[in-house]
Each structure stands twice: as structure tokens, then as C-alpha cells.
Length: 88
Image (cartoon, rainbow, N blue to C red; front, side, top):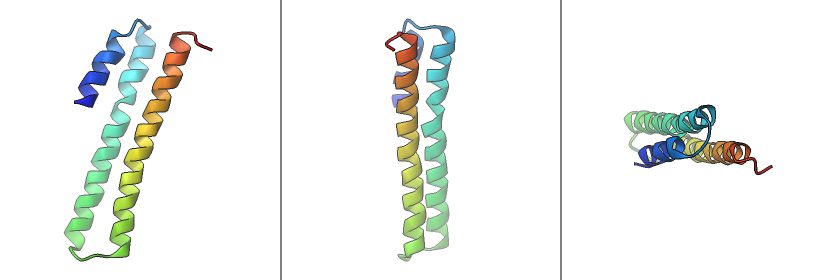
């Protein structure tokens, strides 16, 4: 849902095609991170159903990847919009 909403926002803003494309393509970073996180979780669940510290660390690493991808995407959006609207 957020991907669809932000895609509409990216293409609706009064900015050039290049800037809108960068905003749109940056939305795929969190999606790829979430797919990676899901695959890590599935593999860990397949290997063991018991609690293990390494399993926890693997799942935490996947969750960290998703968080960092969201921060990275937000930084892309902020920097592109600052340049596109000539705020600097």
C-alpha cells in the first residue's frame, strides 16, 4: 500500500522526469530488503524450531536490513526533493 501511495506521490510532484524516476526506483530498496528478510526468517524457521542465539542474530540482522533500507530510502527522498525544489 505504501509503495502504491508513494509511487503516485513521486509521479505527481512538479519535478522533472529524472527526479521522479529516482524517487520511484528508490521505493524498490525496502521491498528487496523485505524479501531478503523474509527469506532469512524462512530458512531459520526451516532449520530449527528451537531457540538458538544464532537464529535470533540472523533474524535481527534481517530486521536491521529492513530498517536501514527505509532510512536509506528516506534520505534519497529528502536529498532529491531538496535538489529538485532548489532548497539549497
